Length: 280
Image (tube, rainbow, N blue to C red):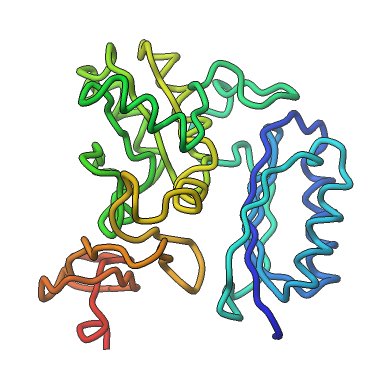
């Protein structure tokens, strides 16, 4: 493979025939020899696809030929080759599985009633104006936050996105209901739904980082409010924005590391922060 590239994008828009979109996406990727994960639902599409840059460009062009996906925010990054084991295209009730498909409402402009979108620059403006009143809420699984997160962020102890609604409804985050809360995740898709779920449950000032950590890292690198590495869902496992401080700690020996690996151990973990030596 000459130049491996990975694209990440999502679009929230009503899809009257998600099964047909799935078949089309599978056909395009198969013809181009691309691998990755694509989820299609009545609410839209969420995709991470990798392959040679020429084929990925063809895929992006084909995907944007569908009117509803024309303005998709495509996030590009360098792959390492063979970044995904296979091509998986699935039709599901939700493109992010919070367990609330009937609560999420979308129109041609995206999720209805979600948080206010903030660009990376607007995020800094909010923090400059409101200071320590601003609460950052990590919208990812807790394993992801172990190697990188926004400074002083609240990181819920959750294993899957399905855990968020029980967490919110338990009252554990009620102290944030009158604060400005900035939700963030890898590329932004999880926070589109999470912020709407929070608004629906009485949180009064909810924001979401537009484009997620990916767009923030592209803009500010290691010179902003982000610390550590970004966990990603492919062979790379993590990416850096420059030369970050290493904030992860190996679960076995405690050494600083940003390495995440499969780790079937006495506690039954599937993924863990694990240094290269202990992994070996």
